[in-house]
Length: 117
Length: 145
Image (cartoon, rainbow over all chains, first blue to last red; front, side, top):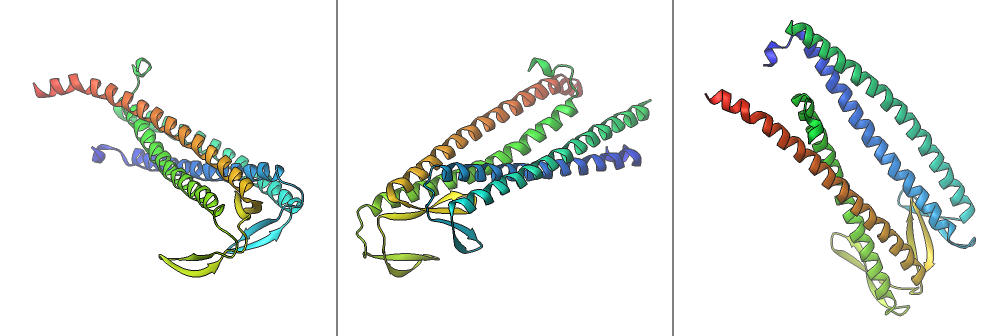
């Protein structure tokens, strides 16, 4: 069956597959960042329930470095913001990839239509 | 099922593959959440047991590969508990337990959601499978004649 597919369509199909892989990789990245963002938000929620003088440790590699509430809240807010920006960037990439996917699909359909005639 | 009529079987087969890929990802997520849940339950049980241990008690501290070093518990009234995102807080045992119980609730909810997603994906895949099977039936008959 594959020997009957003209090289042009084969090339388009390969591109489509590549775009699909890119979309899958982006979706995985997005899901990882979303869960990191959620985790940081949860940590902020927990910190909110604790007194101002609570003893906090921040993990840096294998180390636990003593911190305080103010610094921890500030760092976590910063983290949430950074992750949110990364999510926005991934969403834009996803839009581009999705458009490219539709475009390639249409091109393949057209090429196959021409081939059939 | 009805809205599949008129759809290209190749598109449906592609959709099926996509659902299958998603289901595999969701299953991986489910295993991770289950592991976290077990971990959380272990920590809660340990905190419960710590209430029966006095300060200075001799314990064995795990160093990996089923090996231990001897140690003494200096504080049995407080513990350092993970709150996520790389932060841990020192809390009295009851409060530490509350934090862990809240996490357990969240993990349980997440597991329920994952289960629902998996069931939905399963239903969607099954719908496509039966639709495609029905399409193939007459073709098979023609082919066998």
